[in-house]
Image 1 (cartoon, chains in turn red, brown):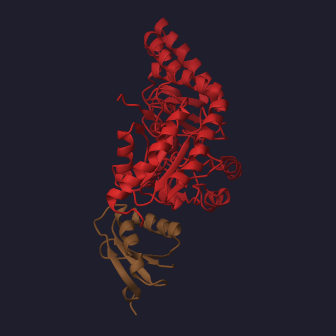
Image 2 (cartoon, rainbow over the protein chains, first blue to last red):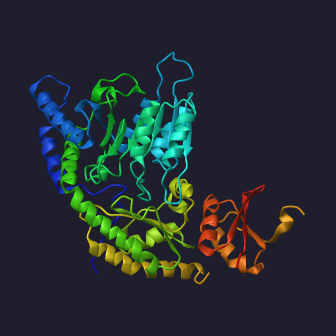
Image 3 (cartoon, rainbow over the protein chains, first blue to last red):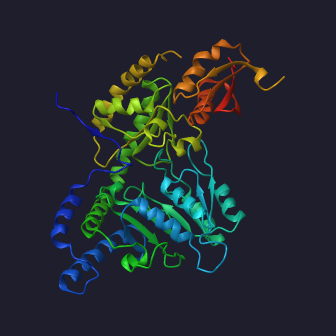
Length: 386
Length: 80
């Protein structure tokens, strides 16, 4: 039997969009030169880079000079946090200021905050409710309570899909004079861009190639390079860009945005179906995250008494690529900090995230096999009927 | 009465990874009478989240966590 594969881990990264593949191949011929050089080849590369930057900036509601390309979404998050926290040399009190962030931010944001903590900074995390949403008033109280250099709130959660109250938090942070970093990795190319002072994103989440992130910093925001001075990318990213991948990323984003309204509505409905049918088909399953105010393409659920690694492995054997936040699937053997902050079951966890163009028939097939897979694993573990 | 004395039963799941501590708790919760306390001893980090979540799903009361020399005792009151 020919194996039928369904790739359902778009939140980790999508397959390259066909238009992005074409753009990448063209750019390998056309955009290989260093855009900072003054000869014809360099000028040609610089024109292409300018066009890509303008295109991405338009999507984000930014001036082109506010947008820098990075080597990944993770690098963009590190640079946003460290640069946003960095103090002027000699201003006293250590190299970095204090960060307030939601407890469910991407680990790259929290890890950068922790690094800064060792040099004068401090990280305060604000908890979330059972749906994974931060309370805007509580977040703003944490910002107000002590001098804060930077606040960080994601547009939507990467593991459970819940949309965060960025509008309200941004308005309140503005009143406090504290810049807000919005990690928009999961929403750019799928949903409207919320207000931001600093913004990060990742091209592989919108169908671009791996190895391209975006860091946008408003002209009015104080940001200091947390690395040796380098002129590339407005001084915000050391070492310059991989131009062919950046051109492909910009092309993929244009295509994603053009289709976003219809495709997001289609995926939203498929996920709604999964959310409704899973608890009827699989006993003792907890579907987590906000049922309505959420990413269009992500659904996460936990199966009581089931080993997450065994579940992902069995689904892979049957042709499904899915994510998991269970401890046994992580190299650290720690459960997902997101699920833990929400207080929901962390074992037996599966995250299904639909790439653009995902076939509803793949999701139907998943719904067909999942009850038997979970029952089989429970049978083998001797927990059926517990 | 010491803290340990108020436990009607204690299940040892030290060294066992998730979901075993919750499974062991579920296996033994009916060994104690309704209203009594049962604890599961675990050093797997997931237990701190998963035991309260299991209580919520099964309608038992999560009483809290008591530190032990190794791991912690996660205490549950059987309600039904």
